[in-house]
Image (cartoon, rainbow over all chains, first blue to last red; front, side, top):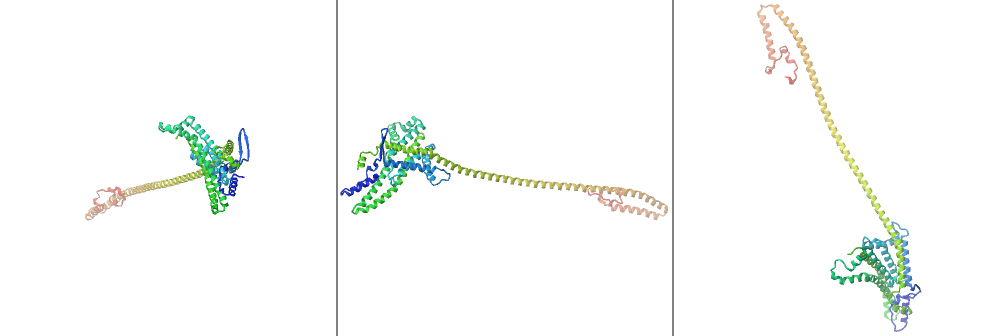
Length: 275
Length: 203
């Protein structure tokens, strides 16, 4: 049983209980029942349907990409064209234009980020899955931490250990007394705020999107089952659920793009010498 | 209800380590496939496509250059041919002029030679005539003198008539020569002077 089905069960249970009213979906949405759990080296693994969705999404994306490049041709077929469009969107639009002339080597990494986030996000509106693994904080956090490590490593490698930190802490062209204010802000911004906002932005968007969809869907179910006049709002709620699904589709692509794009600008700061 | 209870204590911003590792592995697998397999293939395709397009452009450029070279060559040849024709025309004209000059000179030379020969012949004929006449005049004079002497020296009338006639003849001869000429004909040619050809420039 899916977590939404549980929520639906709760809604209907409350409904049969007179005087109860509508119970909105809660955090339980994101903690579906554990299918199996095991422990490796003291680290507990809990396999839920969200874990499986993440794997299915990742494998589907890998399968698609491999199919797209299986028989590469100068005049692309349908699959190759779609894959190429996605890859060159990141390669030209982000790696080359945002990161800069030295950005092309990062194209595979940036494209991986984009495809991974996109595939997992798409699960938010694909029937039977209908929840994005990105609405579990662990997944965006992993990506943000990887990005964090990558852009700091690239910065140190390209500019040297001391020049990299010096340029972040002491911005060139700033009056010396201002460093009291700016240095802590810059350190906070570059090493804590950036990865955290990167993760939170993606997580919160997918989390809220899922909550919206579930609320409208459950709301429609509840309203259609009441005996009074409010039943006419049932179809409205159902319609809103559909509209929000399309909105969610936009958010899915937008968040995948924004995440990759921001990583591109961070890499740009690391690759290029100080502003 | 047991699920909600499990969720209540959970903080969505504090994910369990296991979930993080699962996410890490999922991303690592995709990253591996993209870096090792997908991206190089796409780059290859882009490269091949660029090469194909650039090759086409290069071929077109080469053909254009070839056509241009051919045109240049054709123009050069045309100019050369025109030049050559003009040269031939000029030389022909010069040659014609030369031939005309040569012919004219030849003709002049010829005419001069003819004239000279004519003069020579005339001179010879005159010489001959003069020599003949001299002989005849001598014999005539002797004959005449014989007759005059033989007839009658006393016959004055007749004698004076003969002398007068002779003098008249001489007068007539002098009168028939143009008076204002100033050039005195030789004595032996006095009676035949008018019939002798004299070239224009020698008068």
